[in-house]
Length: 453
Image 1 (spheres, helix red, strand yellow):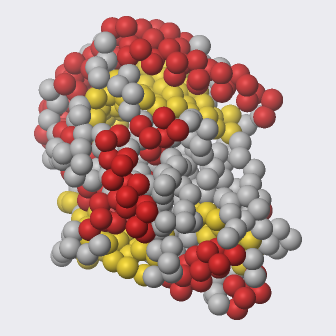
Image 2 (image 1 turned 90 degrees about the vertical axis):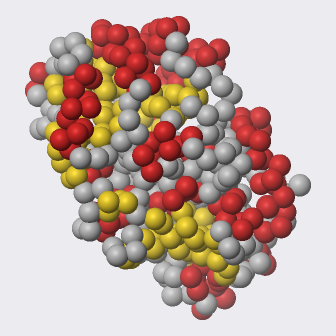
Image 3 (image 1 turned 180 degrees about the vertical axis):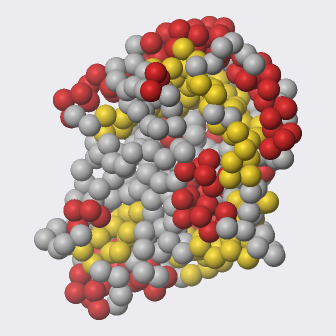
C-alpha cells in the first residue's frame, strides 16, 4: 500500500498508528474487537473515497468502510489494512417543501433527527441517536415509525455510490436498478454510498413513553403486549422488554438500578388520538411508572441513546407468534440476566413493514412476526464468558419457537454461513448476481458475508 501516494491524493487526514487521533479512530461500539488498520483515511468527501477505493483495489490489502461503526461484528475496521472512515462526511440537507433529505454516510440518526426535526419531519428508523444512518439503511432499518411508514430502506429514493471500479454512479428506480434493489437491505457489499436520498414524513409530535412494571409481572405484561399489538393501528409501535433502569432523573428513585418489565410505546400521529389508543395498555395492571405523554419526536428519539464503546454480545431471532411457551422462555432467561447491561426486547414486525413483497427490495423479511433481541453490554473482559454464555444459552432456548430468519443488522461475523445467508432469505441468489456485476473481486467484505462466486 502506497501511503505517500494516497496522502497526496486526499484532503482528509491519513492516520497511522503513531498519529494523534488514531486510537480514537480505532474505537468501536463493540469494545470486544481490537483491530489495528495499517492506515485509516478520514474521508472529507467523495474524492477521498474514490482515492481510497482505488488504492485498496490496486494494493490488494484488507479493506473496510466505517460509517457509524455501530455493528456488533466490529467489521468497520480492517485489521492490518486500509479503513475508510466516513464519519467526517456527516452532512444533512433538508428540503421541507419536497419532503426530502440528502444525508452523508457519516451521519448518525441524531444528526438526521436534529436537522429534519427543525421542520417537523422525520425518516423512519434508528431508535438510538448514535446509530449510523448508512449501516442501518443498508441492512434494512426499523424504528418507531416503521409500522406506519415502512423500513428505512423502503424510504430510500436514490443513492450516490462509489463502485469497486472507482466509478461514481447513481442508483435509483430508474438508474442502475439492480444496484438500487441490492442497497435496500442487502448490506454494504456493493460499494461505498456517499449520499443517501430519503423521503420525509410530517412527524413533529408523538404520544410516547414507558410503562414500567415489577419484573415478577414480566410474563403477564408480555401477554398483554402480544394481545395489544395484534390489533393496534399502524401509528402504534410497542416494545416489551426486561432491563435495569438507570439512575436517571426521569425515573423515580424507587426504581433506580432495578430490573423491571417494561413496555415502551410510541403513537406516530395526533397525540390526543394516541392518548386514547394507548389507554388500554396504560390501564393494565398497576405500573410503577408511566411516562407516556405528548413530546417532540426528536426528544423521544434521544431517550434511546446508549452508552458508547462497551464489550457487547447479542443475538436476534424472529418468532411466528409469541406463544405461552415462548413467553415463559423469555421470562425465565431474563430472570437469569448476569448484569444490569443484559437486556431482552421483543418488538412486532407488522404494518407497513410487511406491505412490500419479499423480493421488492433485498430485505426479505416481510411476513408478520415478533423480533427478539437478546443483548449484553459490560466493561470488564473478565466477565466475557458469563455474558456470552447467557446470550448464547438464551438464544438456543428460543430456537424451537423461531422462524429461522435473521436480521442483517444484528448478525455477527462468527455466526456461520447458514445464519448469514438467512439474513437474505430467498433474495440471496439475486444478491450474489448483483455482487458479481458490481464487485466481482470481492473488494467490499461487509457482514453478513456475501460471496461473489
